[in-house]
Every structure is written in structure tokens, then in C-alpha cells.
Amino acid sequence: MLENVTSLSAIIPRKALSGIVLAAALIAASGTAVRAQSAQQFDPNANAVATRGAALGAEEQRILLNEVEAYFDGVDTMQARFLQYNMDGTVYRGDVKIDRPGKMLIDYDAPVPFKIVADGTFYIFVDEDLEEVSHIPLALTPANMLLRQPLNLGQDLTVIDAARDSGVLYVTLAQKESEDAGTLTLAFNEEPLALRQWTVIDAQGVVTRVLLQNPSTGVDFAADTFSFVNPWASREGGN
Image (tube, rainbow, N blue to C red; front, side, top):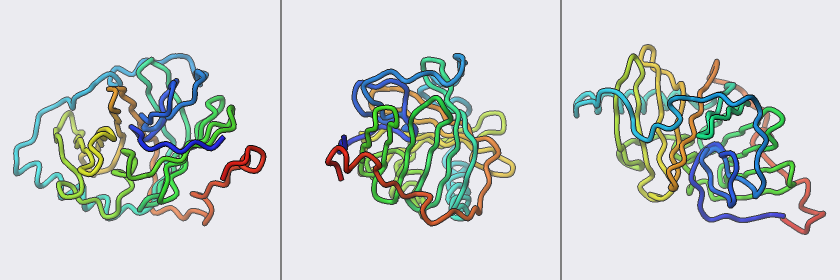
């Protein structure tokens, strides 16, 4: 069944939703519970709903935002392993590939049956267990903030907070044109500046944290990496 959704709240999907909301915005879920991929592991930061650490002054914030913009100007492509920490204490693992602007692939390790593809227009959530595909306009998801090119902080995006804590810099963003799409907090190693994690808080207050492992940039991807053809469309009469 192809389901068209008009709103979403995150980058990587969250665990068990009764409807499709993205936290993860990265889980939009189906109606069935998702099997935990590993023994429950509690992430003490997953429940945080506010940036920790010392807030930056106006001049420090201006310098930081300029550095973040310059960093993303130099990152067209990226791939990494990731750990996704959910609020119930479960942890998902997988691979993420990014090609800015607008494209992303998130593959979860088994037994999590989800895949996410952003093709530049839609944020496509695939549930392989239920054989269902959901298309959400990319602009309605927090993923759109990460996938913008260029990334114009304070112009296209609202900077909610910026802080420093133990060598890590945090910037919390919201979309000016889609205020109900949730917030995205990017965390960077300070020296050298490098993206290390993101945290999404959806409209319901659900927090999902994604920690990148061994990220690499300047990656060449195959032309069809960010394409998805629904294998169940003909059987179900979908598009």
C-alpha cells in the first residue's frame, strides 16, 4: 500500500508509531511494534530536550554559525555507520549516505525492517515487513535542514540555541517555513570542526539521537544510490 503523508517530525524513524511521524526523524512507523535490534542500551542523552553546556554570546555564536556554514559548504557527500538511540532505551545500527542537496539513504541493520530514502523531493519510508512505502515531502521533515545546500543559518533556518560543552559545539535549528516539523540539534567536534551526531525532537516531544561512527566525506556514490522503485506497487495497484 502506498501512503502519502503530509507531515513528519524527524530524520531517522522511531520505534513504534501508531501513525507515521518521523523522529528520526528518523522513525516513521507502521502500526506494528518494531523488534529491537539489540539488547536495550540506555543512552543518557536521549531524553534531553534542551541543549546542555554553556550558551554562547552573540559574537561567539556569529563566529560559530559562520564556521558551521563553511563546514557544510565543503561537505557535498558523506557516509558513516551510525547508532540510533531511542527513548525506550533500544539502539538501532545501520549505514547512512548523504549527497547534498536533498539526498540521503538510511539502511538499518537486521532485524530492523526499515529503509529511508530521500531522493531530492520526497522522504521515502520503506517498511519491508509490511511491504509498505510512504512518501513525505522532504521540505516537511527535519531532514531537509541537514540536506540543504547551501545551509544558510539564520536566513532559511531559525537558530534556537548554540552552546559549547567539553569540546563539543551544539546548534539547534528549526525550519522557518515548517515550524511544526520539529527541531534538529547538530553536534560538532570543535577541533577540527566535524559533525559527530544529530538529535531530533518531534512535535510530540519524542527525542531520537543519531551518533555517527567513522564518517567520511567526498564519497562517490552510484547514480542509483538514492533512487527507490516500489517493488510492491504493481501487486497493490500503487504508484
